[in-house]
Image (cartoon, rainbow over all chains, first blue to last red; front, side, top):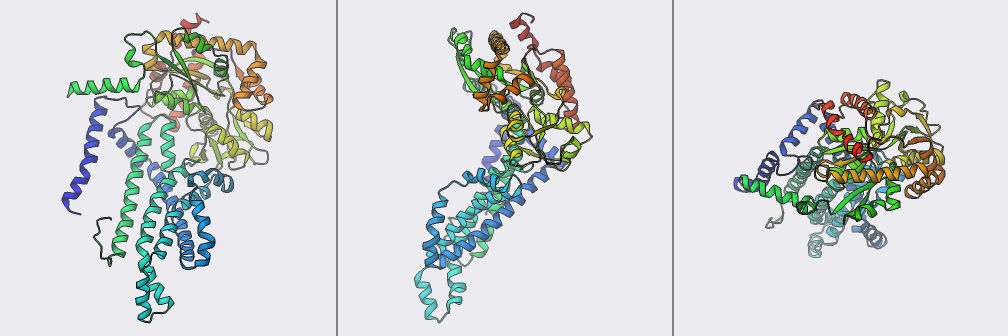
Amino acid sequence: MTLKSVLLGVLLPVLILLVWETGSRLRWWQPNILPGPGDIAQYMVESVRDGSLLKNIGATVSRLAVGFLLGLGAGLIFGSVTGFSRLISHLVDPFIQGMRAIPSIAWAPLFLIWLGIGEASKVALIALGVFFPIYLNLVAGFHGVDRKLIEVGRVHGLGSLALISRIILPAALPAFLTGVRGGLGLGWMFVVAAELLGASRGLGFLLDYGQNISRPEITLSSILLFAILGKLTDALVVALQRRVLSWQDTLGVAR
Amino acid sequence: MKINGIRIAALLIVVTFPGGGVAFAAPGPAVIRLDYATYNPVSLVLKDKGWAEADLGKDGIKVEWTLSEGSNRALAFLNSNSIDFGSTAGAAALVSRSNGNPIYGIYIYSKPEWTALVTLPGSGISRIQDLKGKKVAATIGTDPYIFLIRSLDTVGLGLSDIELVPLQHGDGANALVRKQVDAWAGLDPHMARVQVEDGATLFYRNPEFNTYGVLNVRKEFADKYPAYVDRVISLYEKAKGYARDHRPELIAILAREGQVKPEIAKIQIDQRTDLSVSTPGDAFRGTIAAAAQVLLKGGQIRPDVDVDAVIRDYIRPGFAEVALGGK
């Protein structure tokens, strides 16, 4: 990224912040409806000092991490199996495709009954959200491997295992990483849904807490942190994509 | 820049406050938005009888009803200008007011014992001390939540000593019954329901820690249409009088709206709802001031808040005094 592109990207947020703070100071709107950036900063400082903010961020991030790993693992296993075996694909894929049509949040009440109000139901909900994009992209990746590449491999005398590790996996990798990126994005969405279901800490809890005690600056702080953390984790995946896929000979504009 | 600011502000007011634009021409609002709640049986009678529609309709004013599932919801609705009058507990409104929600407490709809600490037999919980380290459901920003904090405080415990599970009242009742939490800071009629249907017990009761059912109005509405605040209070008083004189019917209405059996509604009405007070007076002031002391200590009210000043500004008995003629 060049300095110019960084400056351009920062311009709009800074402008919004300026107008926002000015408007709040001049009381263009009531602070009980939209508190200014100053109020938000004040809450953040307060809550960093008493340690509650870190505790809430930690709760959300660890839930997301566990849910993401579970969803990733399940996506890898199911995706690989259905990607490689035509029989299992015919057997399982229509079912999973059908399940995908259910908005994952619709599972929330059921998970509450099955798994209770603790961490298990929250993590399961996140894992479910993460699973689908990873699974779908991985299967698409496997099915999309160019037959000519495999022919070339055969001509060079590669065995089945070598074909998988040298040709099929690398060829499916871009699609898989796209799935990982999408899965992580959905994971952030579902962590909010999960934490609105009776969480005693976490950023989703703060979201609701702020509303319930009429302190919108707490809700806004939570939203802001979601934006920052979501962007950070996404940047990590993008960096990983760059690194792992550096062999790709593409324009690279899409990423 | 200055002119622009004022212009934008004016535009915002017109956009955010429907009816605001015609206030110069007409003496009343186009719509009055009330809430109703199963923890406010008087609101159910008023809604059921249609008296607000009949009376305000004479002035060409429409009436809109919104369900509040708890004080937290009613306060959020008031704060976002979604309703004009909202039913809450006194202490819950005070916390919200201290955080900047522009409301007045104008009328007492009931003096209830609507909350207590609830558990199921066999949970091993029989006193407040037993809650240490346990999962306790409560709705943040409501009387049961405040009741829980005050109860814990009586034995030297705080919220950090338990695991609070924030759930809306009805969900909290269900979580208790499904044994997903160990205890619940209850609210009627859900509390009476789990008592009757699931054998739940109220292991800690304290009527003094219940902070009255109070009707709130948005400041902006009250400043603009004080006469209509009086009108709504008069309507409430009519519904309350009817409720007092027609207990069986009141129970039937509550059972229907709350979707509970009549014998459950009967517990709430006959044993735990006192409809004799209407004007927010000294007893009410004392009750929420006592709650505020504990909330300050626990950090639920911010330390820089001048609680006495907030209470003085919040409680406005004048409207009820005018509307009820000193009753």
